Length: 494
Ligand code: NAD
Ligand code: 6OD
Image (cartoon, rainbow, N blue to C red; front, side, top):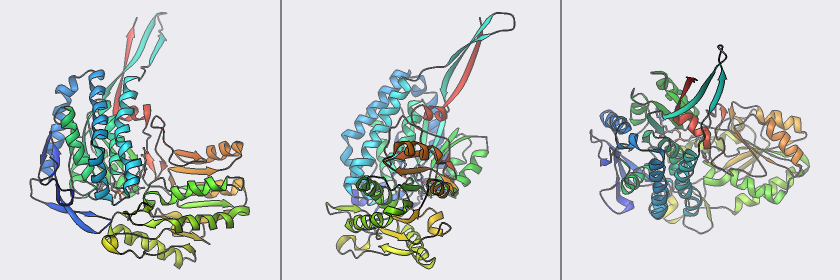
């Protein structure tokens, strides 16, 4: 049981260690707040340093227990069963995700929960079909040697997660980690602990051996996040979150020379050429700017539009933004709240800064009028700026809100230079009907992922990640196996 009560409104959210739900051993807890109403709806039990050490010890012990002895076929069967069980309990996961994030149900039911299941099923397939590598080598004595590789799990993997797509981003790492035979200790965001905790029920239901999947709740520095990443029995750390947090975790990873995989922030450009299909571009960029209330690492907070269509594009985007109704209960609701009062203050600070720096607000810029139960929610208006300069703060720093600056450009070379002039390198989205140009400009983008005439269109077999301040490494398909396994090359003199 994740909870002391069956009501999601009063849920007590517990740590999951060695197959059992546990309170924090120091008796500490913190409130779980629904961002759509601003009210506390649960209590989260914070893991102490001893609890985190217990979770890591359980994960380490599980490596040599029944889990470590399973064949790949047995292991992937269990992992596929996790996917099926998430699907069977989709309503429970949906309720948990909506309670934690405040996001509209249709967003969570179309994106977060199905991906939670797909992340297990897909990596079960990848591991089952992974080919090996071998080389025949000529030796100095005129003979031959055979080189081939075997892959082994890294060991105990720490999975440190953010709050924007909690189940999706956590399982994106837990799926491949387990498929490769590792064990995990997950530290969900303090804002969104529920789905990670609920997944413990799924693990027990499918018969996952104890200690393979563990969850510790808490914060970063001086709490579960730091306790976990500095624990010497953790063999590798995979992290999704802010660039600054990544830097702090990297220092801990240096102790013991542990491997890291980082998916960090972004300040992603979208580029709309004059020959783009304007209907499709406006629809696509309405998603890339406003989906999940802009709380998407892949969000395009910088939008460059070729001058001949600039005014038309701005007018169409403004109409789209004004069509979104903030709130979560209505069928038309698209813009949920931001995750917290603190994050709303940060976003509103950028809204003020844009105006101070001379931007013109096309639409939005403040807090919407909302009555009823959602009056206390952490909503902001969808916001568009023009007359922003390349060096303005809102064009350089990640805001993580439903907003973007829209800037005209005159040539391909100019826009490539503007798009690439950032410390980040996560993704870009290019809109053109000239596919020769589409390919050319996409290849010129200094990013990990570039979409042409689309955005956030995912095939889980592809490499995903960012360069520069946006991350270290790539995950997805076989790329995940590079991180979650250790290779031994065996050389046999024939
Ligand atoms: P965050 O970095 O504040 O927190 C992420 C996690 O790290 C949380 O669980 C937090 O408790 C933990 N943490 C914080 N400090 C820590 C420390 N010193 N040691 C160990 N753990 C620590 O990020 P967030 O606010 O939860 O998420 C938003 C950020 O995540 C944005 O910058 C966004 O771009 C980024 N993000 C990136 C991707 C990607 O794929 N590149 C995906 C989603 C989110
Ligand atoms: O789709 C994914 O695998 C992924 N990591 C998405 C990240 C979204 C960021 O907010």
